Length: 205
Image (cartoon, rainbow, N blue to C red):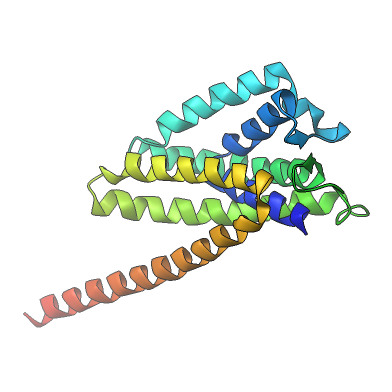
């Protein structure tokens, strides 16, 4: 099941930043022995692909840290991040890494399953990120955007590397994600009740 955990970690990372897991896969596949990309995914290690991913990552890093611009970027990334998640899951789960010696065994008869799984995972993380960012911007007058974005980028890097080297730790990230979703939904419900209470108090006055 290491293949699944590796793909899951990479896809979730793509939901935070589309280019980080793909760039890490490409760099490790090209310059190290940590990842052996399968024949269908060797293009990730192409020099031009790596350069393009690096440029796109630089644009994403800047755009995601500017209030209002980050919202526009999230709208655009609604297509990009799930697509990257599908590619990352497909490549990662089919690659031979330091922990996966029989890549693709879990998905051997259904090659489309990893890609669709990655798309759905990345889309879920992306939607959560997109929903949380306006709340962060509103409650911090926009000053929280660069802090949140930096934390998301750092998380994407760490989870991508961990997914390749020690995929079992991806479970810790997933548990943390579930806890954050629970907190976020509960916090939004509390804020809604507070607004309704304030509105009702205003009517009484």
